[in-house]
Length: 256
View 1 (cartoon, rainbow, N blue to C red):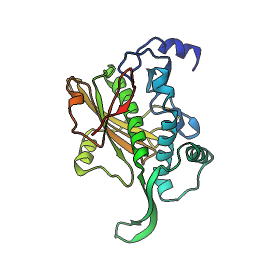
View 2 (view 1 turned 180 degrees about the vertical axis):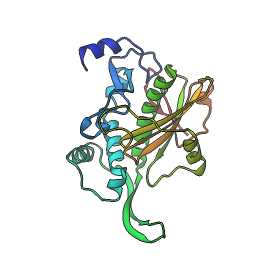
View 3 (view 1 turned 60 degrees about the vertical axis):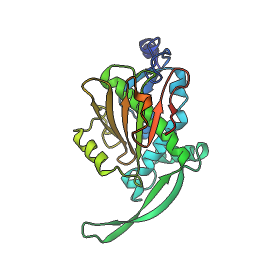
């Protein structure tokens, strides 16, 4: 991080753990590694303490590998791995083995119902799902801050549903995503925008909760609900995972 950037962010509250710790770094949401050859456009950068930022570098790599491996061209096996994808794959294999509980081939049909090829469908292992839920909650808090101008407090919760080619959204959830309107991305003159990252945010008029949808490389995605109200942690209804944050523990899973 350059000197001017450090001066801009140092001393501001961390937006990822309730605002009670001072920021020392910049959190990029999504991280730089998520973009091919790490060519990330500017934007969606928020102040973060070192614990919240640097403590999840393994999660950044796992999420990136999941996104790249769930991209349509990877699922269909239509292209070989690029040098960058190969580097991410090797790094993930070394640092985070056994990501999947099951990998299987499934038929792909054309409009007439004829099988034209097969694709790889993967189910995440329990530990992998929990890691990705924490990563998704982190991205959600950054997007919450970006779109509300507020730091989610220590009383907030983030409900998360992880979507892969083996875990599709329910009809209700799919309708909610569709009704959220057009997707956004990072602005850039390079061709690294919506095909690598797009998102939607819908904030309640009272500013007490937001619904977030984010998708990476056209495959892996998550839906989250950020709730920042006094009764947030009393509720156990929601999506697949429930995450909380505070200055003492940072982001952590709540029992369901």
